[in-house]
Length: 251
Image 1 (cartoon, rainbow, N blue to C red):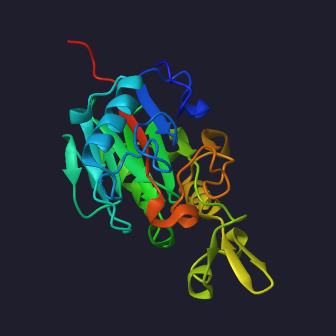
Image 2 (image 1 turned 120 degrees about the horizontal axis):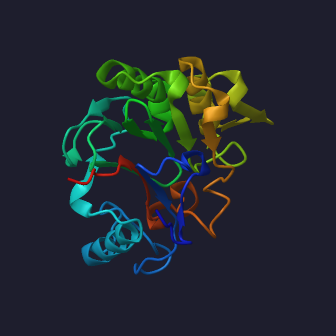
């Protein structure tokens, strides 16, 4: 799959050409600045702009929008198994083993986690905000992949995408206390959360090899040249999309 320059394809999935995997940036869209390539209908953008942005992104990675499965994203730790495309309410992560279904999450500081077991041919897309992370949503996704599709953590490959990082992601003490000290940085009484690190710990504790995990080094808050950020731009922020799916098999 050829990825255009305004999109990201995680290197961890190179060599797995049966997988469709991509992450959009803020570039390449038609929405007025600062929305740009906004892919969400829920941020006050014009519907026709969002539809054109989605068309451009999905066309660039050879996906038809009717193949997308989209979680409602309610900042929960709920994971759903899906066998068909469409909107799935009341959850923040999806798993499937059906070729042709492309799982998606939208983000703008929250962490996208993409998982695949190449042997069981099963995949997951996770929207990990601090609430979902504190409740173990990445762990829940791995366990449901095991239970539903026979995936094994030792085979799973994972991508942790761009998100708010501890350089910028300040949280209150009540939030910081929900997390392991290893992923909280405290400076002069102010607390900064490493949400990527928190989810990586969950994946490692599930048995996923560190060699099978790729983490983006980018903080969405301090990279306005590449990413949308709600923490930085507030209501003026667009949303990016991360997708993963199995290529539909030829008849």
